[in-house]
Image (cartoon, rainbow, N blue to C red; front, side, top):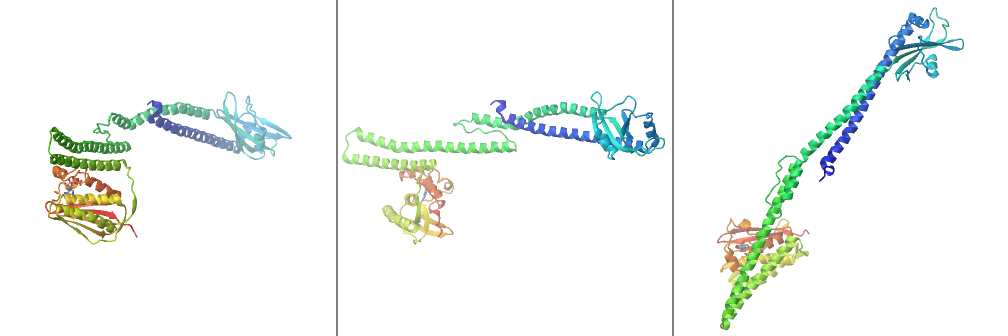
Amino acid sequence: MSFIHSIKFRFTIWYLLVLAVLLTALSAGVYFYLSRSLYRSLDDSLELRSKQICTVPPILESIWQGEFQEELGEIVTLYFYTGNQLVEVSPPGISISLSHEFIYQAINGRSSFTTIEAAEDQGLRLLAVPIHLGIPGLPLSTQPGALIIGRSTKQIDQALHGLVRTLVIAVPLALALAAGGGIFLARRALKPVDKIAHTAEEIEETDLSRRINVNTKDELGRLAATLNAMIGRLEKAFQRQKQFTSDASHELRTPLAVIEAESTLALQKERPPSDYRQSLETISQESRQMSSLIDQLLTLARADAGKEQWNFTEVNLGKLISNLSTDIEVLCQEKGLSFQLGQAQDLVVKCDEARLRELFMNLLDNAIRYTPSPGTISVSLHREGQMAVVAITDTGIGIPAEDIPFIFERFYRVDKSRSRVEGGSGLGLAISRHIAEAHEGKIEVESQVGSGSTFSVWLLLQST
Ligand code: ADP
């Protein structure tokens, strides 16, 4: 990625733009503030001087006679009328052109300031004040006049030029330093991003064990921790997938191997019909087991892909269980087990009836499979708050406490060989839990080895 397209660059440019606007505004503020206060103090000094001149007759007299000693850089001029004519009394060699308005304003009694351009780019600040020449020894004592006092603005101009020169150098310099600092800081702050991107590029589908090593407590540290947690989840999912594939192929290989061995053995030589029957029965049983395993695998694959079609309707749980019981009773009788059905209650749940049947059949199949004769299988239904609870209890072999947390995992079996002999695949409970969760329900197990197990299915009741 080029530097121009990087966040660092954009970050620095925005930062510089904001800083440039701020510094320019600040510089302009300083310039105008300084200029105003310098002119104000010059004006104050002009006003003070005008009062001094106007209130001390000997000074006026000396001005009138052209003998007044001006202070350095100062100009004092008098304007007054003789008859109808305006007369100007200026120091020798000094002549400034003033607007008539400026002079007449003062003659008419109003003081005012102005700034004019004098020789060689030098400014002159002028104050015009009204004056009455009622001084003994002066002619025309009754006529109003104007006193103009001017002082050079050279020092102010120099100070302001100096300030501008300083700012013209200082502002770009500050911006250049800020740009350097900005790039450095942005680079430092965004360094973890490079690290994250680098590690992410290195992580391969087959090796998800790597983690991003950014341990800061800021936002990027949090991002890295989130990504690490995500990679962790992916790794686990990937491992589960790998395990599932290897378990599935193993499960399919076993019946296939039996079928192959059985058929090879049968075909080796001529055998009596009863032997062929025996072989075909074995092959048929293995095929059924394989077919049911493939069905379960497909169910789980659809569940994982989120492509299941659910058909939710309102179902009376009591009726559903009574219907199931007829089939289960037959199966129990075949195995020499007794079956008990609790009192049927009219509890209505919103569910996919076929899938809920599948769930209960899985649990009942297990109960029959893992209960030796003589034993009892019982089914009950009751209400707990807003939930309907279906409990399937057997007096079978039970499940060791240490296995209970794992029995809902795919292909997990407490006794692998026993489960296989009994026709189990290790997927029934995984599918059952998935169906319960899809109904916003759950399955709980209580079991004791040698005494039996109870599987309770909790389902949300339809509110009436
Ligand atoms: P399987 O097809 O092997 O029965 P399941 O997923 O249905 O697979 O069950 C997982 C394991 O849980 C079984 O292999 C068995 O060891 C144990 N199990 C399930 N139900 C019962 C039960 N009612 N009594 C004893 N063990 C059970």
